[in-house]
Image (cartoon, rainbow, N blue to C red; front, top):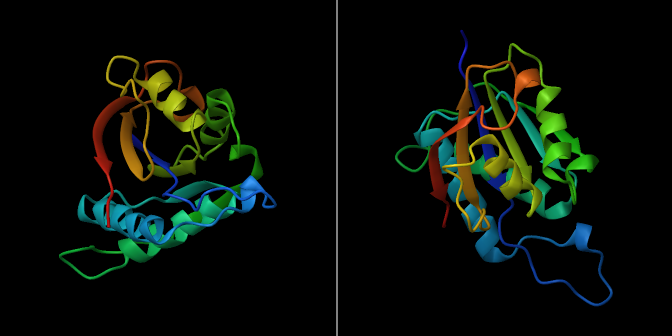
Length: 174
């Protein structure tokens, strides 16, 4: 039975909203860029290199992925081996998504994929983590740049409530 790893990442800290700007176009702050790279370094250090990245199409999540990718390819001791280049899917449906919307995206991943990184927004990403492992989920949810690692032996298509235990969590700070 193949173990599957789902890494949930709430996007890094973004600039505050402006009166004339669209929320979907908010960029990362300087701290957010540093935190995203730190998240990538942590993933590399622990061998959590994704084969597939499901990323909200919002600017701040795309920039978070870019920082994570840069952090994963850094040189030791900060980073680690980069591994194969993941397939990145920018998903418009992950923006302002409910947990069941995010779970639908994960369930569509090919069954041969072992590790998926999902980069999305609150409250959906926090509620998805709670759905997958109710007793171990943080009641305060995911903060910016929080990573939660869920593991399951089920195929992606069969993930359901309580079927993917939390094995690690980390708040990335640059």
